[in-house]
Length: 466
Ligand code: CTP
Image (cartoon, rainbow, N blue to C red):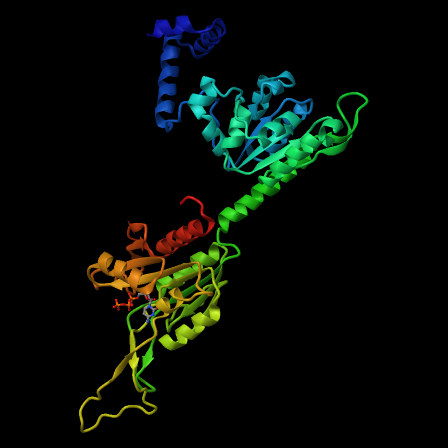
């Protein structure tokens, strides 16, 4: 095998091997054996990478764009654009149209981008290694620079007869155009009509600028924006996108109830339950971290107000209902409080005293059901109403019945039996029940449940896949 390997090596490599072996005082065969041993150890230690024709990137950059270069004289500026983007740590994957390759070579683009550009809808490289659908989606933004009149016309009409247009039609990411063309082509009604269609479709654009054209003697509006202007537009769009990803609930109002309620018997005694409020407070923190404006209506608990959350402290179920009604309207209501079902019919003004008649008889009346009341609202009903079900047996069955009875959209069911440990504990194993079915989440911290629930709420509000 060793001799086979050496025979297949180029003359240059053989020469360098010979020199290296001589310098180390080893035979060529020994030198190769050592190199193979070192190389194999390194390869085995390295996690396997997906096989691709494209040169391996050391690591995927946090921000990645797909640059489509169309066929215009301004294509030469795209090389500078790629360089400027990479300098800023933005990964650039490139698609070149056939016409673009008349202006700049794929080799020049590949050398600057650090990866071979994709050129053909049907070649093995782009279709089988990456595929135009993945090419269209595995990025944060698609930039077309230069965007020629022809490419804009084909985009506006939904063509997909080459890799660039197929990717543009298949992408679910924002598209930024940097138009570049002769001023007469730019002002032509057809181009302006196509631009209007594209803008109506949500496509963004930077430039063109006015000035000298690359063709001699031509000037006017149609010069591609300078690479640094395009970079600034890209950075702004990526930053906006990051903000939206970090704060998926920005601009949304979320109302949360948490903790127990205390129902007075007399001025010193009350009916209570073991709820610690930890789950509801965790949801309030997670929702605030996701950018929501949160109102937390909390029963008597010892937890501090979560930062950035409007916390309203209440005692009884009736106080809680009042505070909830005052906090509406909201986009989402999450009712995690363990509201006392009953209160005493007559709250003693004075402390009850022991008497000859034995222990007092407490007459109980039902408390208002806050969740059911809000679920049944007409105008002020939050778009998404989420209840909790505290169960000690037949959890799913009881929770499903509760979903129907209370008229909410989702129920988070948890086991509050002593064995379950959720009441007062730090962990929770819940099931999310909706019309669509039952989802059982793994046992995790209450913060984990809160984050998962908030992510589900955000996905529901934005309609994005979970
Ligand atoms: N809930 C409420 N107001 C009440 C009682 C309950 O808003 N007076 C809410 C809770 O915040 C929770 C859901 O209703 O989101 C279910 O609470 P749970 O105590 O599990 O159910 P109950 O309606 O009290 O029914 P049961 O005690 O019979 O299980």
